[in-house]
Image 1 (tube, rainbow, N blue to C red):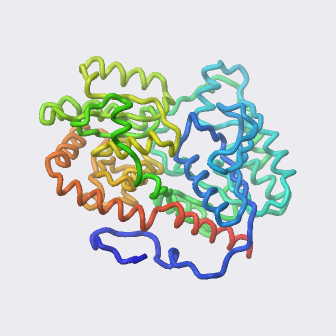
Image 2: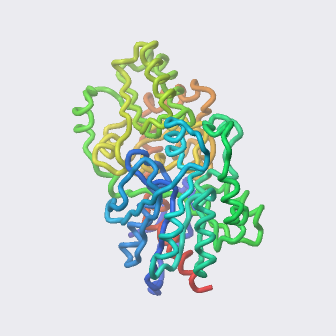
Image 3: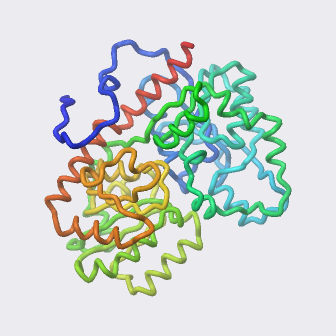
Length: 437
């Protein structure tokens, strides 16, 4: 395979030496991944990262499995695409919460306590590496178990620690106001304030957070390890099937968005662009796909569709399982992908759109500027100004040659820098280094 870059204007981030690995194979490892929740019905970029890197690690002969909590899923054990999942009981450290408040906390996957996870990690046999995907609650448990067993542990920060804008924090629901918080007492016993300080390594999925964490912990190993994409899967699909199933005429240009139905994802901005776009292009159709994590926001989107009489030109599909055939078909059916998020910690759907061969319009926020180039492989827009999305989408609809060039450069970057096999090779190297020290 040639590694030459046919698009000189496209930067790539990975050193090509990471692709051409030597013949020295690391010893086989058992790794336990520990996220707060792991459930198909509320999938996010964090779950995708854990699942896909685990699949590649297992294909290399390692044993990477998931220990999680029963938040939103009561199944104790299952396999998802060949990866073993164990879920454990937990409790909310706030007495007096309503059923709705508990459900909201489970959806966020935060501030949950699990003594049974602590016990299972302590008993697990032949473990080499513990890899936590949250600092709060489970991060403290992982630190305690690692110190007890003399194991290295890694913490991944999925853009939720030092890189969350103030306005997003204000948007996050806080169901615990007025309740007694035993969470802080438990964390103080388990040394929560030292979870990052004592970690063998810290992984950040975007460069902004990596720089902030490295500045705070100058003597700590802090790695930037971006998300990836299964380029083979997303380059194959049947757009015709998706259109047929969802009643979308074949002469329509589909503008696609994939992401949780949540104010942070800002799908409302795309609905606001539709009247102006329809005046110029009467053959467009907006498709929004994602789990409804904030019901009130989902109702607001439906109300906007009603008020603007957009029934015939908008489809809202409340969630498709990660990597499922219908989701891949949706990407293949689309003509343009749009991501209007107010903040984006991972941006994994941009990679999926690139791998699917789509031109992309995305907010210039969070992690997006760290791996995209405006006018080269993406068009940036301002999430607070829907009209900037209108202008960008209109440009792509009017200039098919430019749209094709944008899509081709994105596809090249997805394959050369962000395929899960390459991302996982770097993670595997990190694990091996930690076991050698």
